[in-house]
Length: 506
Ligand SMILES: Cc1cc2nc3c(=O)[nH]c(=O)nc-3n(C[C@H](O)[C@H](O)[C@H](O)COP(=O)(O)OP(=O)(O)OC[C@H]3O[C@@H](n4cnc5c(N)ncnc54)[C@H](O)[C@@H]3O)c2cc1C
Ligand SMILES: NC(=O)c1ccc[n+]([C@@H]2O[C@H](COP(=O)([O-])OP(=O)(O)OC[C@H]3O[C@@H](n4cnc5c(N)ncnc54)[C@H](O)[C@@H]3O)[C@@H](O)[C@H]2O)c1
Image 1 (cartoon, rainbow, N blue to C red):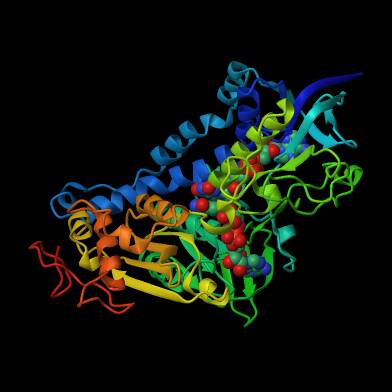
Image 2 (cartoon, protein in one colour):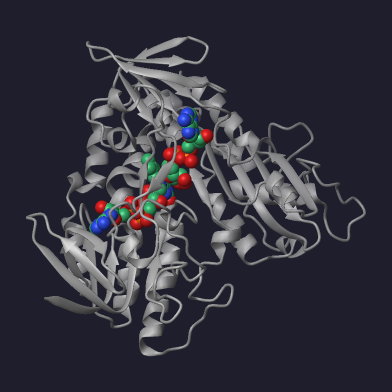
């Protein structure tokens, strides 16, 4: 027997939850299908545990960078307390809170593995083997996320490597850890474990954080080395072996070997779409689900005649980030509701029912040492896209707020400006506590705020935000005869406070 509801959401991660919430808020009857934990990867094995594992050591380092506070820091990181704090934040891997919340908003929770079974039909295999069938009056939204890739390196799969799941749920940090992959997960986990006192070796096949401005990866490599980690760039792993005594031996292509207790694979993600029934609706199992800006699955059976199948979050591969997936979820949840009642659709760029920002303004914070954050395009990407760009590079040593925040503050900022439109199209900040600067850049990009107008957004003195003033000065003050050429970093108005840059002040 089939049960009919308005909307079926498969996957109860942050994205599925948000899509269900929006559709339900509009009064639709919604069922959410989840086979593991409501809250998904992000809540239990990714964003939340990784950030809590990183935070305590970062706070300790921050205190040690302030004279006066430093003298008060006499102990070491309490690793067991860090792990206990992580356990609190992941609710000891219980999703009772998530399930209760769904109930409180009136979304039905169906626990089990969901798969499509033709147009608008979903079969849910419950844990006991029983199957239930649902039919969606209006829409099915798939938000099943992604899994880690285990690359085909000789012996790697047999060596029982850690993925992000084992790393983020660690109960006893190993003495030695090899990390394969120099992307975001590799860098963050290397930072966390180095903070615990683990002897960490990072093996990156090129530089670190390859999607960001080169200076970000360079700063993070330097930071990791200062934490005691070994960072090997341009390293190719040839073979991995788990010895009978339980050690892991990693062999590089030059024959060198590294012995550790665990090896973490952090080499990217693949779609969680293999047993999703995609073949029953004209799509390819195992592929990312391509979508348009409304999250409508491209090429799915029946979607042309009457839109019904949408994919949001990691599964559509637009931006593998929780906040961006939730943004997509809000758009698609509201769109499905509008379509259900025949309400107005806002699908033009920047409308409420499209995820336009996915193309131009995706913010990302890498919680490394130092933090590396970016939004929009890098200078190289902008140039490759054929834009005439102006670049402003400044050091945080010209920012009083940074010097007050931490003694000997080191950091770097870059704005990429579309010279023709005179608006920001990319921004990167690297340094302690730069994460909270990112939203200002995101707003500048999304709002297409002209550079000349940004001069009127006055950053408070003496905050880190004054880096914006330095960046604007580097671009040149409009209407002024002393306008600086693009790239002139660290100009200043000499209003009196001390900075580490000679000739540069508040
Ligand atoms: C180590 C690590 C750290 C990260 N840190 C951050 C961060 O700090 N900030 C950030 O923005 N992003 C971060 N990310 C990325 C972030 O975790 C993902 O972008 C996010 O989880 C995607 O959400 P989602 O809902 O699409 O998928 P998921 O969170 O993976 O949720 C999908 C859900 O669907 C369920 N599911 C799958 N298939 C089925 C099925 N057939 N039937 C029923 N249920 C199913 C799963 O059990 C899961 O609960 C991190 C990723 C990793 C690996
Ligand atoms: N703070 C955050 O926002 C955060 C943290 C972690 C993960 N994430 C998201 O999760 C996703 C997955 O992260 P990730 O770090 O696994 O993927 P990634 O794509 O960011 O990085 C993977 C890295 O592994 C390298 N690599 C690939 N194959 C390799 C091989 N065979 N040998 C050696 N290196 C290899 C790649 O060159 C790349 O540098 C990312 O897209 C990221 O956005 C976000």
